[in-house]
Length: 635
Image (cartoon, rainbow, N blue to C red; front, top):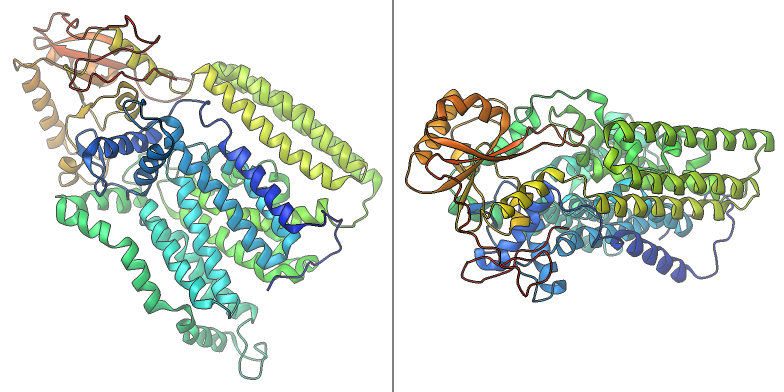
């Protein structure tokens, strides 16, 4: 049963099905646009693409590999879906397999499905019209636009977490098919764990537990035998809600959860030594802050919430206050559900010392649900506004937007000059679009104003995304290293080792060959606690291993940070020589220059890798391996 609307609305059309199809088409367009353009794969994206590539090359599905190392730090769902997408969309001539398009396609599809789930939940909570607004807000928000074009697991994680919240709501709010919905809830939670365990245990289970055992009793929605919970004390209502936990189908649901999720971690523990040590570092040390020396403030995620909800950021404060305002009283239960989801997730993530912007994308659907009634009341409700106040507000919005664009332009010129062209394209679209939205609103064409806002945001993203891809700026250092290795004819027959940490996955992916670490993550897992504090014994062992291999008769190339190389070059001088270095791009990351060193006796004979461009397409070169597979041209 759908919720009723709380205020009169301007008509949106006669066919709800046609409106749903329009929402779906819009979501598909903005989520899939530009997957073949835009910037090249980032480091973490390339991990997914390379792991999927090695699955297709025969390294196995159950335990993905990146280079020659089992990648079990995270569950494998992102690798599986990227490999499956490559089988479906990559032509057979793509060698090595898994294109950037295939790697990013699962995220784009996940974004479309998340939009549909937000609509379904919004329709159940608020009715069809506001559900459409919720879905459209999700489709065009900054978080969705970015992560739908990113091969990392975040959009897939968001999809399955949203599925868990959606089916929990449907399973607890309606008697028909209650068990089916709850079974789907546990299945969604299990798939979320396969995407990025153990984060969903906190970001899904914790908000739902607070909702079920605290918010519902406080609001008095768990009626007693007399049908009136207000006459009872709060402890009595909480006690009754605790006793009602059986309605959540916990025992059968846990069976569904375990069947889907548990086999993979058990299999990994049986097959991979030190897996538990590695997971401790990745999960416990990550949360405690042992992985990062940078301490971020508790309010770190608040500005990120505004960025994820752009272009609706100005409405976010009212959206968060809406559950407590009388005008939204008929939507209060759904709004409190979304508010609990958003606030608990932000609070939990804020308690972690290890903070990253993409961790908050799982709350984006909750933001969209909170924004739906606010945007519907502002743009679609039959309301009257003071013309003078309305004009002043529109002038302030336009002037503020233009000033923000100018300030952003100065920042780009100073810090990210390679992106100036892309910024100008997106800025021009916004500079024209924001006034157009305000004019339509002033002329009482508010539905048109809302539609223009959506289209303007989508076009601005497309312009920026394509412009970044043409500039080839964000991955400059990695591209330069790949091209220089090719120019120096350092190829598949030459062994390359990454000295400190794990190899940059972009190099591995775009070179189409393995680059091994000096120590694998599994080797390190049992010898250290976290990444921030490296034991001196481990540093000494690494230096000894590097010296030993430089003194060997086997030709080998090592990639090392310039800062570390400059500290070690005097002690390694008799054994190593510098081949070349690639300057770091200070505008985009804090990495040092990358230096390639080799054995001192290897006096520049890097010509054993022959570039045979004759008869091949421009930018493609053959390699002397068993398959003679061409290395793909850089984007």
